[in-house]
Image 1 (spheres, rainbow, N blue to C red):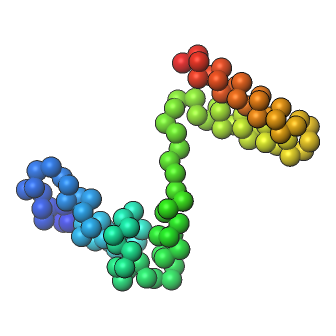
Image 2: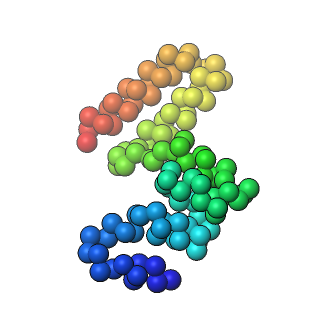
Image 3: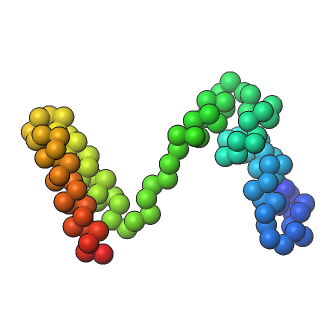
Length: 107
């Protein structure tokens, strides 16, 4: 694919995130572009791709904290304890908060 080579002379690389390049790359790789400005593109009217495109507004990234996985695991554990009524919701959340605060303070 020579998409990047077409405008490589721009220097700052901003063309890589521009609408034309983003759409061309998405079409070539059968992926969904993360640009609202491409909402009307014919490529995104496909009945299979459209729901994925529309779900982008609900996306979020995983926190990049080095202890994130441990905190997430603890949250899953205490949610299970609360839903099984082994702990109250307040107690489970308190335990998770104490655990997370301890990890974050030890950094």
